[in-house]
Length: 64
Image (tube, rainbow, N blue to C red; front, side):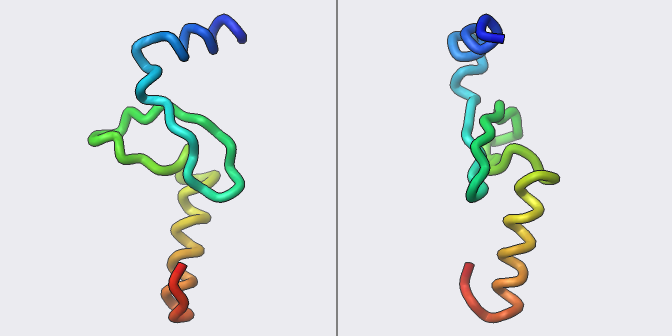
């Protein structure tokens, strides 16, 4: 596992590493999305929660 981490951190994918932008999530992921504009480690664990909270905030009239 350590060898794979060293290879990842020193390999060609190193610039693509990002930390998840969801509050409380500590996952790191490789952003291979078009435009490299991804914010979350994945929709199921984090993206859906953030989007749902923003939606609820808009419905209540409070900014998120």
